[in-house]
Length: 124
Image (cartoon, rainbow, N blue to C red):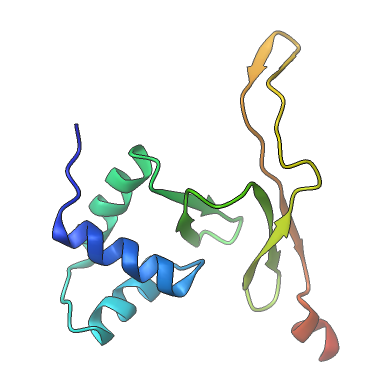
């Protein structure tokens, strides 16, 4: 059983405020709001919040993980190859059907798209 400590509440509020956010962005947001927290504490808190299905980690091929709230409608993500901005891409089928593929039980799916965001594409 996990507890929602005051530190975790601050982190959740930061993610709600920022949307997709890196650990450094979360730390900056906390700092701007007068909450001092070591990066190691933020890492541990995010791991706990992930296990509780409160936040979701989105890992990209650039080695920079983003965090978002878990309770959002199902969606995929687009990551800009130039500025690394991450955007939500709505799922065409909001409901996911559990499937068995080659004997493997598939419970969920997510797709990461990579390319240039519209801002970077304009200046390409």
